[in-house]
Amino acid sequence: MRRCGAALRLAIEGNIAVGKSTFVKLLGRTFPEWHLVTEPVAQWQKVQAPGTKEASSPQSFGNLLQMIYQEPSRWSYTFQTYSCMSRLKAQLEPLAERLLKTPEPVQVFERSVYSDRYVFAKNLFEAGHLNPLEWTIYQDWHTFLLQELGDRVALHGFLYLQAAPEKCLERLHRRARSEEKGVQLDYLQQLHAQHESWLVEKTTEVHFANLRSASVLVLDVNQDFERDAAVQDVLMTKVEAFVKMLRSEALPSCPNPHSGV
Image 1 (cartoon, rainbow, N blue to C red):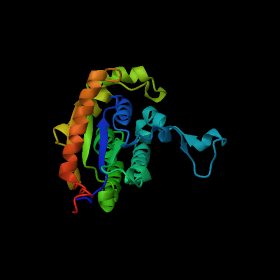
Image 2 (tube, rainbow, N blue to C red; image 1 turned 60 degrees about the vertical axis):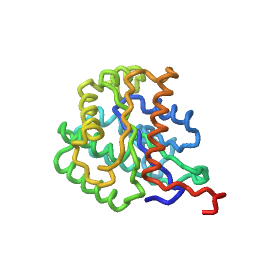
Image 3 (cartoon, rainbow, N blue to C red; image 1 turned 120 degrees about the vertical axis):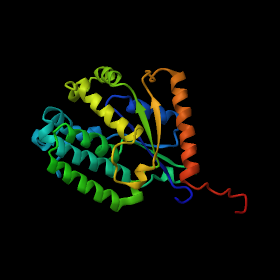
Image 4 (cartoon, rainbow, N blue to C red; image 1 turned 30 degrees about the vertical axis):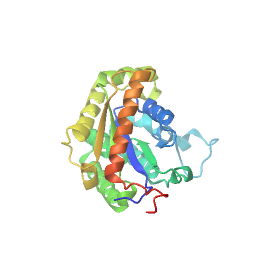
């Protein structure tokens, strides 16, 4: 049981180009008091060597996102290590002063350290891009860190944006991110299957008790919700109800300051 006023912590999960960034913006408009943490894609696109500045030579930087797409067997372990650490840093950030003053604070992360392992790293191993030794080492430090950090990185629930891989590919082509131009449908199908196994079918072996019991809200986003106000209203109503349910189950209510309790 968390203390009164503790933040409810959620993660948005879903396939590449499913609409997570659009969904984060929609959450921000609907629930402006919430703290939303976007995926650190920009960090992956320009990994900077320590002590260097913007004016340094091109060799001081690396587009790790592009590198993993171009040579997955060479860069998968490096990328998954860096992506997991960047997510971990985001989940460990202390609550902002503004959020501390909110009666019922909510933090929402765009993906998490859990999908990093149980979707992306797992899929790279099963596809042969992470060799068994790399996969063993990755899992060892991932388990150790998360067990040591405990509640500091625990999440109360997941918002799973679910859409057909074909729809994700259509959206991926529409946003035209240069690193993703070689992404094929079969890769999106693999990631879809990993998400389904973990969050819906619950057949993925997970190694953290709190994760096995975490609640999941499945949101069908096959419809293009970016400009459809009616669809947006339905999605936000479901999210609001899910958050209220989680708060009643996971966090104690704050006593009324005028009740004398």
